[in-house]
Image 1: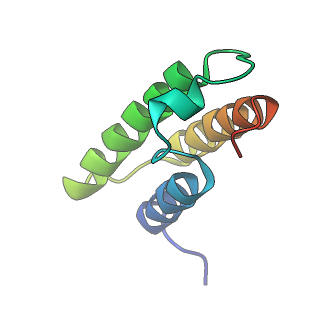
Image 2: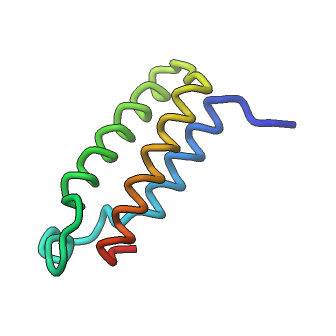
Length: 87
């Protein structure tokens, strides 16, 4: 049985939190080469995650499009973190 979109969104949010270096200190994020400002990218994806988590907490059911958009954004941010040797 496939999960509903709320469960899928919660799972995606948890996967993104574990895959990206949200707990890394700012001085480590901004050290070394900087391609595409990883600090701003983390802030952006963090605000997106907060938004969707708030919607889930308020029992707003996400659409498949929202799931797809968040996954696409997370892939781009992860790729940026890899370019900056942070993941």
